[in-house]
Length: 269
Image (cartoon, one colour):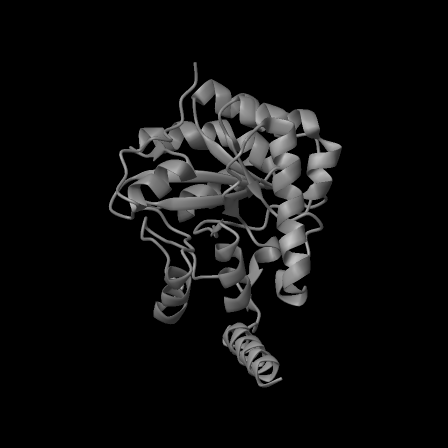
């Protein structure tokens, strides 16, 4: 009897410890944002937020001492422009990461397959695009696992390693849990309002915003639903090459952060 009581006591202590560890993570929602870059100077999220992100392997910048750029796209649904974007990337030999939702995987499997076949990274943008700070740990895992499993089924890509939280909303808790699940959470250092499909302003709008905010180590966030982005992309890539910038994949960035010999560099046959 004493042995049983002792075991029960140990279980209670263990559960209490787990609860205290879990409770130690703040779930206060944080909406990703920063002061936009000007004059090729990288933006900063501030010392406190930078430290929080660093603690959980999260990043929004590359190496700001190098004129390297990382293109990322968010794909919640298809609006007819992703094929055009992929055409430009293929022609210019530029890598990108596409963060996809469950809806996109189910609705556009051929485009997702093409992304992977042409050497791009398919990242995780959650299955239902919820505010991850408002869902349980179990639901968060399911949101990410569902995208991972379907991406692997469609593409054969076994290393769905990058996560972009829906709407850029996160907390210490979601960062910690995502890291435990094996994800690198990726934010961005260059973005603009481009997702309103009924408020497109012409290719110059997208082009000008990219050029005004560009800086060394930039991680660009673009939405594939934008006609402006699709029409500006080729011109922006050409101009940035002229300015001495080069485009790299997130795998390249991770390899450099880990001091590896860059085993994941993007190549096209």
